[in-house]
Amino acid sequence: MGLAGLDFLGTLIVLGLSRLLVLWRLGTKGLSATRLDFATDACMLPAALAALVVLFFYQGDLDDRKTVAYALLVCSVYAGCTVQWLWRRKQAGPLVMAVRARAPVAIFFGVCFGVLGIVEIEKLISSFGQTGDPLVHVCSSITALGGFAFLLLFFGVGVEFRKFGCVTFFRFVPWESIEGYEWKPSWSKDTLLLQIKLRQSPAGLQTTLHPAKKEKIDRILLEHLPQCAQPTGADALQAFDLASWSERKPAERMQVPVVMLGLSGLMQVLGAFPLMFWLVAVMGLPDSQPPHDQPDFMNLIILVAFLLLGLATMCVGLIVLNAARNMRKLKNYRACRVSAVLAMLPLGFGFLLGLPFGIWTLLVLRRADVRAAFARIVS
Image 1 (tube, one colour):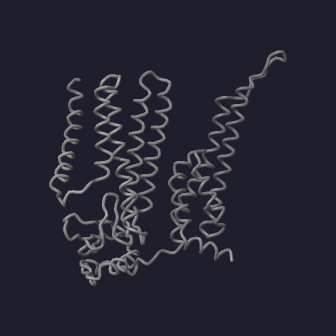
Image 2 (tube, one colour):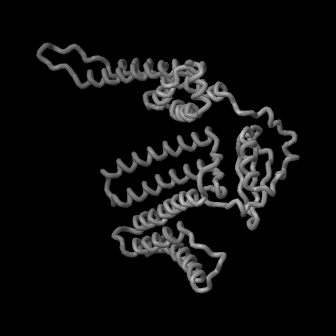
Image 3 (cartoon, helix red, strand yellow):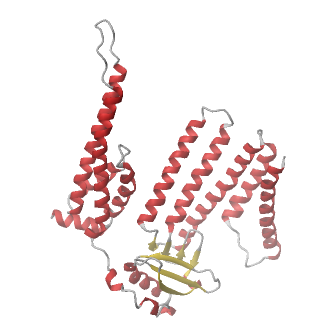
């Protein structure tokens, strides 16, 4: 094994031996401050052992062996952290309130990671016809796809307030471990910063949220933390007009989805005409053939298929435009939901806006107050 493989091998050995030393001290001396960690002890250590076996015994060159070993190690960490997060949620009890990433941020990361995932799947499919070890291609793609899913989950989880404590992706903090909390103005003018201070750790929890949620979070925290009858940081919010940040009305929530879906539908309609005219100009209709010659039916079939695709794109654009008009008036709830799904179909240029804002529209339409507003208009 050359020098290129010794660095990876040394990293595996150091990681494994350091954690085994901690476990040995836990077993022999019973250190109360040391706890078993599922992601590290049940997932990473066995994966590190399997990676060592791959590095020494797998048939292939050094780069292929390192790719397979790295996939084993990294995917085990992804899986272990995800399972551990689910276990923390179960320990913390029923959900009381969740502060997730804001919808535009979540949609942005979701679309980016989704596109990267589609590209990675396409690379994996195309690699099956190439030379090389198929297992190496599969391991490389699984590592990338797992990383995209892990980052999306990490950015989207936020902070959950549950019956027995607060849960983030990497931590569970019982209520009795919380000393207090503090509100501060955030870097953004339309958000607040919540900082939760812990008793025995300088690394507290913090999250940003919409000011309209402050009253509900205060009620939850004061219910479980009676010692915080007056949370710190109240003076810093005196200049922050909380009264102006009441819960938004359904019509206000629909403003951005209406505008962006309308633009998506307009792009679909306007993009359909150049597509059809370009196809006719490039492919053309079959030339006149003598009676004894067979016409080129294949070109004709392809031309008709793309013309139908252009017509379908234009029809979808018109449907989305009409749905945007209905959303602005809070009318025809079911058709609005169907149109949001149609906007996400990759039929034309409007797909670039239709995918992220179609998801956003569906999230807004799922809200109880928005559904009730549509129902009031109908009645």
